[in-house]
Image (tube, rainbow, N blue to C red; front, top):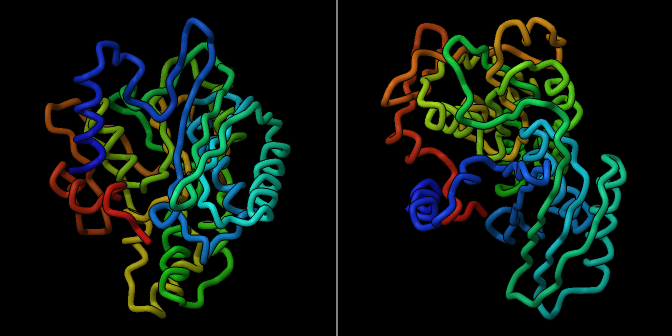
Amino acid sequence: MKELDFLEIISKTLSVNSYLGDDCAFLDDLDIFVTHDTLVENVHFSLHTISPYLLGRKSVAVNLSDLAAALCIPKYISVSLSLPSDIENSFVEEFYKGVNDICSEYKVKVIGGDITGAESVVVSICAIGKKTSLFLSSRKYAKKGDIVVISGKHGSSSAGLFALSNFLYAPQVLINSHLNPIPKVFESIQIASLIDSNIASMDSSDGLVDALYKLALNSKHSIEIDINKIPIDPEIIDFSNQNNLNYKDFVKWGGEDYSLIYCLPEEVYEKLNRDTFIAVGEVLNKDNNPVVIINDGSLKETVTKKVFNEKSFNHFKGIL
C-alpha cells in the first residue's frame, strides 16, 4: 500500500480533515503554518554515509523546505530524537551543532522537543512559520494557463545517494546535494511578495514528477512540462554516462532535491529573475483524470496514476 492510500484512509477517518492535503497546515485562527517531518535511519538516511552534524542540518532543512513551499517565514522548531542505547554522547552534541547552525542561518529558534529510546535513530521535527502574504499556497490552487516554475535543480540528490549507496565516485556537488540540501526559503519570500492571489506550490522532496502529479491530482488539472528545461547540475550527466545510467531518471523520479515548484500567473512570472526561477511548462484544462505530460523532444511520456504508483518513492519499502 502506498502513502496516498494511507492518506486517503486518514482523511476519511478523521471527523475534521479540512487542514489536510498539503505539507503545511495553515491555522487561520493563529495565523501560523505548522509542518512535521520524520527521518528514519535506514529508510531516509544511513549513518554510514551522513555525519551526525549533517543529519542535524538536513533534518531541519527538510522542514524549512515545507514552510518555504507554504510561502511563510520559518520561526520555531521542536526536535524529537529517538536513539538506541549504545549511541555516543558525541552523536547528540554533533547533531545539535548541525541543528543550531542551520537555525542560526535562518533565524529559527529551537523551543523544545523530546528524547526517547529506540532500536534505530529517528528524527522527528515540528516546524512553525509566520504568514507573510495575504494569499495562500496550496496544491489545489493550480489554474489553467498557470506557468509551471522551478527554483532549484533536480536529480543531483538522488544521484549523490546512488553513488554513496553503491560506493561510486561522484562529483562533490552531487554528494553535497544529498547530504546538505539548501531550503529555498528566500526564494519563497520573494514569490510571496509578488502574488495577488492564491497560488499552487510544493517542494520536490519526493521527486519532481511526484510533486507535479500531486499538484495535478489536487487541483484536478493536468500539467505539461519540457524535461529539457528542468535546471540540473551538469555533473549529473557525466556521472550517469560513466555508470551507464540515464540522468533523466534521476531528474524525473529522484527525491530529496528540496527545490520548489510553483504554478504562477504569467504576470507574476514576468516579474521574476529568470536565472533563479525557470519556466518549464504550463497547467492545462481541468479534467476528471489529471495526468502529467513530460515532453522530451519528439517523445511524450504521460504519467497516469498507475505510472505514478509504480515509480514514485514508497515510504513503506525503504531506500537504503
